[in-house]
Image (cartoon, rainbow, N blue to C red; front, side):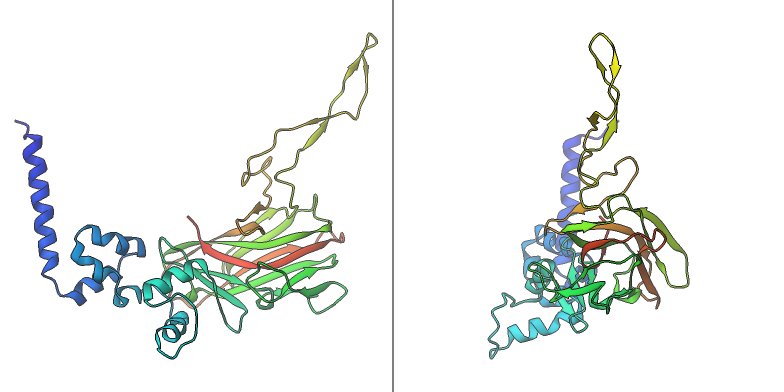
Length: 318
């Protein structure tokens, strides 16, 4: 005989209430420890279980586990009575939320650190100063410049090269464990950029000394959004003459989609462009390995210029 749905629902509600009551009798530090082993999103939702959880869920004991130690000075400076800083940080939770929207410069300003809001996982961007760029010290080929709306004081502008080689490395211990990361070259093109229209670029990602994953992309800023044309014949009048050279537009691809299997940049919310370099799964976070990402065009021999590099970003893949 089937159980009455009303009875079943009441029993479930009774079990939930009993579980909540059991949690209420736990010591505060025990509850804080349990919440610190979840995610920021779970910690925020925990007070829905019981309003008595709210003070614990917002305590520094919980959120201290979600913020990186590199950012502790921001909280310490703002919590001291003598601090003149205007940062809106008075708790570790506020520090966490601040880092989700305001990347922190570390390693002498050569690296930026931010947090993914939902999971609390670490995101990094390597500045051009932290990258290996061939010919970067030759003014005829590259120059340092300052632009608004960048994370770093200076970015690298490509004047002209026929050998494009950009490499970046980061220790895997700095990354969040058990996380699938994706790496991106973040860049812009100048109005006079050239040499990238149909030039394939090889990108690589992998551990130094380990397996390297390679793929081909294009850095043409408009390649994934402008119309592609093909030559079609057209019949004219009674003579059915064909006039070659008339072009028929092809449908535009949706943004972030590949065009005929070719990978082009997409526009970011900050106005810059990014192209995916590949993915890497960071297992334990304890292995001391170097993750290397590369952008290469060393075979074509053609000159190219008008590229502005802000850096290489490594962030968790949704």
